[in-house]
Image (tube, rainbow, N blue to C red):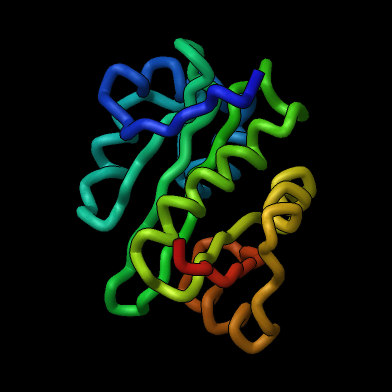
Length: 165
Protein backbone atom coordinates (compact mmCIF):
# COMPACT_ATOMS: atom_id res chain seq x y z
CA UNK A 1 0.00 0.00 0.00
CA UNK A 2 2.49 2.64 1.10
CA UNK A 3 4.73 2.46 -1.96
CA UNK A 4 2.64 5.20 -3.54
CA UNK A 5 2.69 7.61 -0.58
CA UNK A 6 3.36 11.24 -1.37
CA UNK A 7 3.59 14.31 0.81
CA UNK A 8 1.81 17.45 -0.36
CA UNK A 9 1.50 20.91 1.16
CA UNK A 10 -1.44 21.30 3.54
CA UNK A 11 -4.44 23.11 2.11
CA UNK A 12 -7.35 24.58 4.06
CA UNK A 13 -9.77 21.82 3.02
CA UNK A 14 -7.56 19.21 4.74
CA UNK A 15 -8.28 20.69 8.17
CA UNK A 16 -11.79 19.29 8.59
CA UNK A 17 -10.55 15.72 8.28
CA UNK A 18 -7.23 16.07 10.09
CA UNK A 19 -8.77 17.47 13.30
CA UNK A 20 -10.88 14.29 13.63
CA UNK A 21 -7.75 12.13 13.93
CA UNK A 22 -7.14 13.10 17.56
CA UNK A 23 -9.46 10.68 19.36
CA UNK A 24 -9.21 12.11 22.88
CA UNK A 25 -8.30 15.27 24.74
CA UNK A 26 -4.97 13.70 25.72
CA UNK A 27 -4.19 12.81 22.10
CA UNK A 28 -5.09 16.34 20.97
CA UNK A 29 -2.65 17.78 23.54
CA UNK A 30 0.10 15.36 22.51
CA UNK A 31 -0.42 16.36 18.89
CA UNK A 32 -0.95 20.09 19.05
CA UNK A 33 0.39 21.10 22.43
CA UNK A 34 -1.06 21.53 25.92
CA UNK A 35 -3.50 24.26 24.87
CA UNK A 36 -5.04 22.32 21.99
CA UNK A 37 -8.77 21.88 22.65
CA UNK A 38 -10.67 18.68 22.02
CA UNK A 39 -12.57 18.24 19.94
CA UNK A 40 -10.22 20.30 17.86
CA UNK A 41 -11.56 22.81 15.38
CA UNK A 42 -9.98 23.45 11.95
CA UNK A 43 -9.47 27.06 13.03
CA UNK A 44 -6.24 25.92 14.75
CA UNK A 45 -4.47 25.60 11.41
CA UNK A 46 -4.35 29.28 10.38
CA UNK A 47 -2.88 30.07 13.82
CA UNK A 48 -0.37 27.22 13.56
CA UNK A 49 0.62 28.21 10.03
CA UNK A 50 0.88 31.97 10.62
CA UNK A 51 4.63 31.71 11.24
CA UNK A 52 6.37 31.74 7.84
CA UNK A 53 8.89 29.18 9.14
CA UNK A 54 6.12 26.54 9.49
CA UNK A 55 5.76 24.20 6.51
CA UNK A 56 2.67 21.95 6.92
CA UNK A 57 2.20 18.72 4.93
CA UNK A 58 -0.35 15.97 4.43
CA UNK A 59 0.64 12.41 3.56
CA UNK A 60 -1.43 10.68 0.89
CA UNK A 61 -1.66 7.17 -0.49
CA UNK A 62 -3.54 7.61 -3.74
CA UNK A 63 -6.56 9.71 -2.79
CA UNK A 64 -6.53 8.74 0.90
CA UNK A 65 -4.99 11.13 3.40
CA UNK A 66 -2.97 9.30 6.04
CA UNK A 67 -0.98 11.83 8.04
CA UNK A 68 -0.34 15.44 8.93
CA UNK A 69 2.93 17.00 10.06
CA UNK A 70 4.98 20.16 9.98
CA UNK A 71 8.56 21.23 9.47
CA UNK A 72 9.69 24.25 11.47
CA UNK A 73 12.69 25.68 9.65
CA UNK A 74 14.84 27.81 11.96
CA UNK A 75 17.38 29.82 10.00
CA UNK A 76 18.84 31.44 13.14
CA UNK A 77 19.62 28.07 14.76
CA UNK A 78 20.32 26.34 11.41
CA UNK A 79 18.04 23.43 12.30
CA UNK A 80 14.70 21.92 11.39
CA UNK A 81 12.13 20.62 13.83
CA UNK A 82 9.55 18.01 12.87
CA UNK A 83 6.33 18.91 14.65
CA UNK A 84 2.63 18.18 15.12
CA UNK A 85 2.74 14.77 13.48
CA UNK A 86 -0.47 12.76 13.59
CA UNK A 87 -1.51 9.64 11.67
CA UNK A 88 -5.08 8.77 10.72
CA UNK A 89 -6.31 6.30 13.36
CA UNK A 90 -7.26 3.60 10.83
CA UNK A 91 -3.68 3.53 9.54
CA UNK A 92 -1.70 3.53 12.79
CA UNK A 93 0.59 0.61 13.56
CA UNK A 94 1.23 -0.07 9.87
CA UNK A 95 4.49 1.83 9.34
CA UNK A 96 2.76 4.95 8.03
CA UNK A 97 4.31 7.17 10.71
CA UNK A 98 7.80 5.89 9.94
CA UNK A 99 7.32 6.52 6.22
CA UNK A 100 5.91 9.99 6.86
CA UNK A 101 8.88 10.87 9.10
CA UNK A 102 11.23 9.68 6.33
CA UNK A 103 9.53 11.94 3.79
CA UNK A 104 9.64 14.88 6.20
CA UNK A 105 13.35 14.22 6.74
CA UNK A 106 13.96 14.15 2.97
CA UNK A 107 12.37 17.60 2.76
CA UNK A 108 14.34 18.79 5.81
CA UNK A 109 17.61 17.74 4.15
CA UNK A 110 16.94 20.25 1.38
CA UNK A 111 17.56 23.08 3.86
CA UNK A 112 21.22 22.15 4.09
CA UNK A 113 21.02 22.43 7.88
CA UNK A 114 22.94 19.80 9.84
CA UNK A 115 20.30 18.71 12.39
CA UNK A 116 16.65 17.81 12.75
CA UNK A 117 14.93 17.91 16.13
CA UNK A 118 11.67 16.56 17.41
CA UNK A 119 10.02 16.95 20.81
CA UNK A 120 7.62 14.45 22.27
CA UNK A 121 5.90 13.97 25.60
CA UNK A 122 7.77 11.17 27.41
CA UNK A 123 4.54 9.15 27.84
CA UNK A 124 4.11 8.79 24.06
CA UNK A 125 6.08 5.56 23.70
CA UNK A 126 4.68 4.72 20.26
CA UNK A 127 5.87 8.03 18.80
CA UNK A 128 9.25 7.71 20.51
CA UNK A 129 9.71 4.23 19.01
CA UNK A 130 8.79 5.59 15.56
CA UNK A 131 11.29 8.45 15.83
CA UNK A 132 14.04 6.19 17.19
CA UNK A 133 13.50 3.82 14.23
CA UNK A 134 13.99 6.84 11.95
CA UNK A 135 17.43 7.49 13.43
CA UNK A 136 16.56 10.03 16.14
CA UNK A 137 18.29 9.80 19.51
CA UNK A 138 17.91 11.84 22.72
CA UNK A 139 19.83 15.08 22.94
CA UNK A 140 22.31 15.24 25.86
CA UNK A 141 20.76 15.92 29.27
CA UNK A 142 22.13 19.46 29.55
CA UNK A 143 20.52 20.30 26.19
CA UNK A 144 17.23 18.67 27.28
CA UNK A 145 17.14 21.09 30.20
CA UNK A 146 18.06 24.03 27.97
CA UNK A 147 15.41 23.17 25.34
CA UNK A 148 12.74 22.65 28.00
CA UNK A 149 13.37 26.01 29.63
CA UNK A 150 10.19 28.03 29.07
CA UNK A 151 8.24 25.10 27.61
CA UNK A 152 4.73 24.37 28.92
CA UNK A 153 5.63 20.70 29.60
CA UNK A 154 8.82 18.66 30.00
CA UNK A 155 9.46 17.19 26.57
CA UNK A 156 11.85 14.48 25.50
CA UNK A 157 13.95 16.10 22.78
CA UNK A 158 15.39 13.89 20.05
CA UNK A 159 17.81 14.81 17.28
CA UNK A 160 19.06 13.34 14.05
CA UNK A 161 21.84 14.40 11.76
CA UNK A 162 20.64 15.46 8.33
CA UNK A 163 22.83 14.05 5.59
CA UNK A 164 22.90 16.06 2.36
CA UNK A 165 20.94 14.67 -0.57
